[in-house]
Length: 87
Length: 94
Image (tube, rainbow over the protein chains, first blue to last red):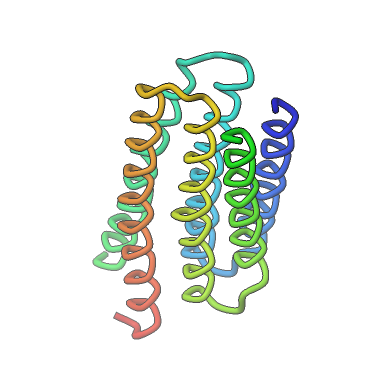
């Protein structure tokens, strides 16, 4: 059963890598922000898998905080764009 | 039996994650990429966390996973709205 957790971990890291390629290529800022969103969610999954694999319950709290802060990033992105448009 | 269901759920979540990131790479414009991303965010993470909760079989841990999933749902829907609004505003040139 732990082997399956490893398989999931490697798959999630692959998905993270694909997201990073989109960050590099993304023609607009919105595309990069979308990829950052994907990376955040994948990070939550990876942290939870790691917390089970290495028996570290504290990592679930880290995942919770990461999930809560994901919305703040997008809100900051949108707000900052509005401010720069107004100038 | 429960282990088999848990592994199927986790693999399903993994497939959704991979499809989401492949879609993010290959789809042509921002709106369709948004569509691919929400699948990975909501369904992929939901299936993965359900599988993890069944695997661990601990009520407190499962409740925490539900909390995390709800937070990710709220975050992804809010940010999808904000990013789409930003893209639309740039398109119309306002």
